[in-house]
Amino acid sequence: MKALVIASDKAELASFHDDFIKVVCGVGPILAAASAASAIAQYRPDAVFSVGSAGSLGVLRIGDCVSFGSVITPDHDLTAFRMKRGSTLLPSRATLHGITLDRSSSYVLSSSGTFASSCPPLEADAADMEAYGIAVAAMTASIPCFAVKVITDVVGEKVSLPEYGYTLRSLRALLPERVAGILERL
Image (cartoon, rainbow, N blue to C red; front, side, top):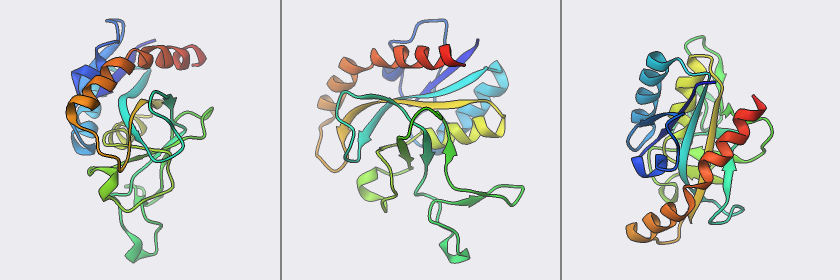
């Protein structure tokens, strides 16, 4: 099975061996979606994984490695059209509010182009900046997508870049193990 793992930075992919197709997308949902769509077209994977770090919104603890059940975005605001915040319209005119990822998980990931501490909150367990873009690209290509993240910080608590880097380096080895467990179920 060909698995594509996509992360914002090469440090988040450092623990993955060469059996995985690895793509660095940069930071944010737009770069993530464009990179994912391009990599999906080029490699035609059987599954896509958004991997890396996320900030806890309360329940999850630093050090947890989680596969999220769904991903939502606070970036879409069509409430003027009486749509729920975070919803958007697909080309088919169907309403999309969140994307289902891992049906065995109930955790919700909020994915935004801005830091979670500066976004209007949606009901979620953690926040990142790339998973929604990657999930949209995979959904469009009808390929299963998963978001596997290590919790490196708590949203709203100050963390320095060196602290974040140290935490990520100490936890990133958990990512390939969680991804391998999901691949065994597919």
